[in-house]
Amino acid sequence: MRCVLIVVLLMLAGCATAPSRVTNACAIFSEKGGLFGNWKRAAVKAEREFGVPVPILMATIYAESGFKPYARPPRTKLLGFIPWKRPSSAYGFAQALDGTWDSYKRSTGRWTASRTNFSDSVHFVAWYHRLSHQKNGIALNDPYRLYLAYHSGQEGYNRGAYRARPEAMNGARRTAQQAQRYAVQLRQCR
Image (tube, rainbow, N blue to C red; front, side, top):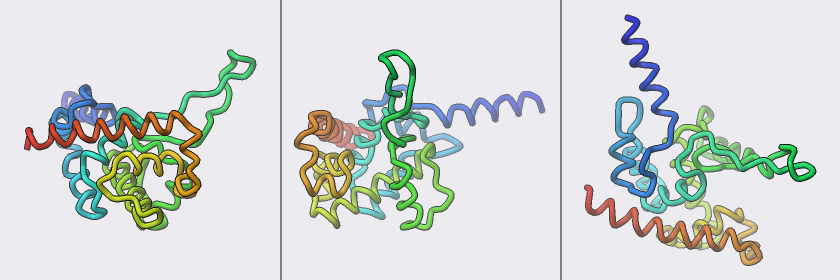
């Protein structure tokens, strides 16, 4: 009985960790396809529901959190050395803000969704990218612009706020490149 409990606890602990090879989609899905969750199944389901390709969903999560379930932005420093407030409420795999996550739950009826759950987070990213398509006319297969809207928000994207933010432009470029790598990898491992 004691051994069973230890095994179950170790398996649960493994569910709340980042995969070991985050730049390889095949490795991620292989590692996270176990007993307590199938990341590939969740990503494919989100793709089917919202029309956003799996490589783009995965690249967005990679850019936002590196697949770390409890990721948060670093704290700012008061007087240069005292840990202070965080710059935003971004949290979890998708780095979703509190208000946006609440809108997602209201819109989808997924009231128990958690930002630290991969299935919920990949569904959120697909939902948000679909919103960017509907509100801003961004193609569902355009990882560069989808990421700009994700990073800047729908209205920020509309205003072109990302143009004054090099981190947004660089993040979009890296996300597009990673989506392309994931797409090639997924064709080879299927």
